[in-house]
Image (cartoon, rainbow, N blue to C red; front, top):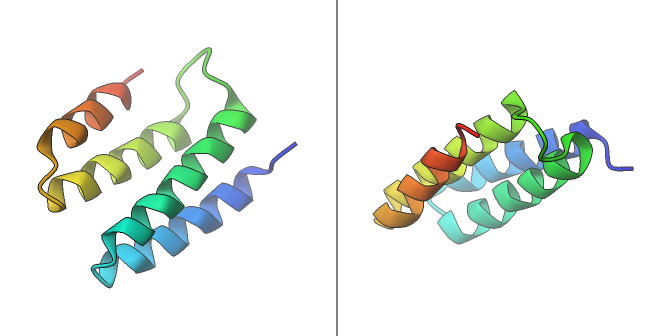
Length: 79
């Protein structure tokens, strides 16, 4: 079973790419983190790590000018 620390590492790598302006690479890392968190915590009830990662993805989409994708990520981060 995946471990949440692996997802944290993906998030950290994504944040570095994000800071470098390498948005596609950042998005890929954030999505890896999200997939690990979902595998660990499931989808039955919200978990803060899932919500935080979805907010990171939403913020990244916003900076990329992909506003509808950003909005969708922000909205699903609440579930």
